[in-house]
Image 1 (cartoon, one colour):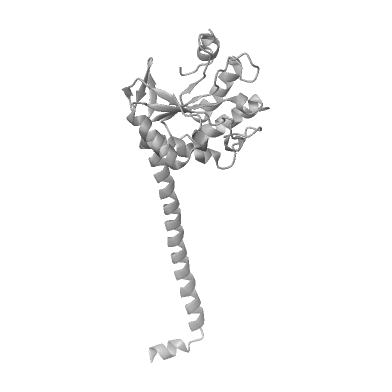
Image 2 (cartoon, helix red, strand yellow):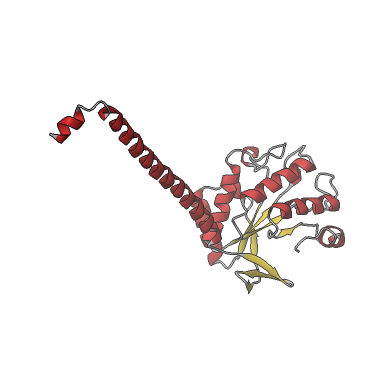
Length: 239
């Protein structure tokens, strides 16, 4: 009897809508919280994946890996940006088994311009940062350090300011990974006027440190050129 009286009550329909709105609100709030938590979970997982491996450091005049002094033996891996996942996995596993501690990759290397990290304006090409991150992650999976060596001369017409912007964007994209260092210019003191000066090297180094103060930064010189004071010491490089 009470239900019949309530069902025929003039406010019955309004009560139904009120209950519906309240339930909808709580369900939406729950789902929104779950989605946000899931997104946060995956973000934290990606960060944890990067941070769970090797940490390269410097103590005095020695490199360290996870705080332990280590002599590092590297090998150049020029075609890294063109390599498939299967090739990277196989090569990195073999290099580690042969006693290498790291690989040197040049993401602006020029045999296939479409696979260069940067374009002529210093912008990172679509998909290329993700490819470089993948290389760094696969190296870490095999306990390898990565020397990321940039070369301005590999991209004809690339201005120094644009080059710097591209390096800084790369630094931001790799900030979670500590198993690498930046070599900001291959053979910086080469007589061809297509590299960077000592002053420009110091400026690029400062721009990297501004976004990642703990990133190890260096610069390559021609052997026995005598320019270490200008580029490395005055440039405040880590080594």
